[in-house]
Image 1 (cartoon, rainbow, N blue to C red):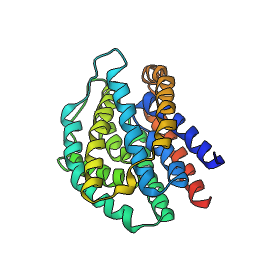
Image 2 (image 1 turned 45 degrees about the vertical axis):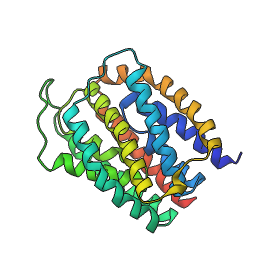
Image 3 (image 1 turned 180 degrees about the horizontal axis):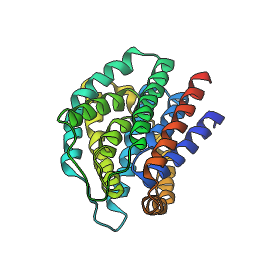
Length: 253
C-alpha cells in the first residue's frame, strides 16, 4: 500500500470522526486525499458510499430519537437533483488539479461567509427563523453540483442551517438526513449519465468501510461537549480552515 493510500485512509477515519462530532466534515477532510489517491470519478463514488454509511450510523445506532428539521432537509434534497446532473458535467470536463482547486475555492467561499456570521451576536435560544425564499433552493442546487463533481456538498447546507438560529442538535441531525438523501440522488445522477467509473473497487470499500465506522464511533462523545460549550461555530471555522490547507497541499503534491 502506498503512502498516499495510507494518508487517504487516515483522512477517512478523521473525517468520519469529525462528521460524527458536528454533523459534517467527512468529505471536506477526506476528499482532497481521496482525489489524490484515486481517479476523480472513483473518489466521488467512495465519498457517496462512505458518507451514506456515516449518516445511517448516526441516525440508527445512537439510541436516541433524531430531531431533524424536515422542511430544510427535504427541500435541499429535492433541489440537489438538477444540481447533481450539472456536477457530473463538471466532473467530466475538468482535470484532477482543476477539481482540487474547485474544492478549495468552494471551502474558501464557505469560510468567508461563516466568518461574517460568527462576528454577529449569536441568536438567543429558541430564536430559529425562516431563511430567505431562495436560500433552500440555492443550497440544494449547489450541494448537488458539488456532491457529484467534488464530493463536498456540505458547506452550502451547513451555511443555510447555521443562518437559521437552530440548536446544534437540530443542525447535526438535519445535515445527517440531508446527506443520507444526497447519496441516492448523486448515485442516480451518475447512473443517468453513464458514469460507470464512479463505482468504487471492492478492495477499497473493504478497507474503508470498517475505518469509517471506527471514526464514527470515536467521534460520538465529542458532540455533547461541543454543544454544551457553545463552540459549534468555532469548530466549523476551524474545520473549514483546515480543509483549505489540505486542499492547497493536495494541489501542490
